[in-house]
Length: 132
Image (cartoon, rainbow, N blue to C red; front, side, top):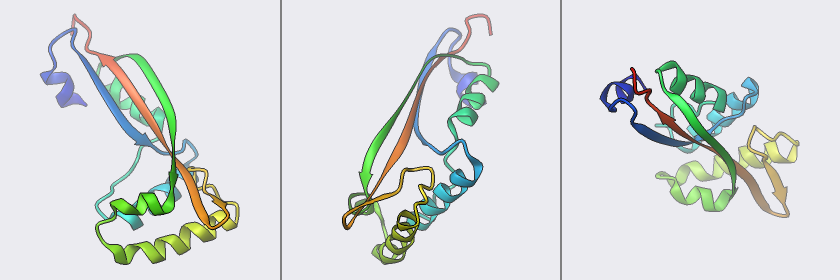
């Protein structure tokens, strides 16, 4: 964020959109663990409060913030996996969590045989102050 602040002209605007994790630390930890099982290059999704704090901490003023949930189905989500061998164990883990009523911060649920969940997105429009 500090590099964005440095290179953006005074009074300039920028937008960031990203998937965010739960504000509840245990849920966020589980959510990120599921993402790492899907994609080992995943590092960490931030909760909305931490993402906003990074933006304001760098000196930006948040002008608007929008959050929405994108419904997902497990099999559709697995279409973006680079290694098909990851799918069966991940399917077993998320099915067990959903069967146990564990939402993992993503609303994990079973709908018949389908595993459903959501990804929560956060879009922040921010401005660099004209005087900084």
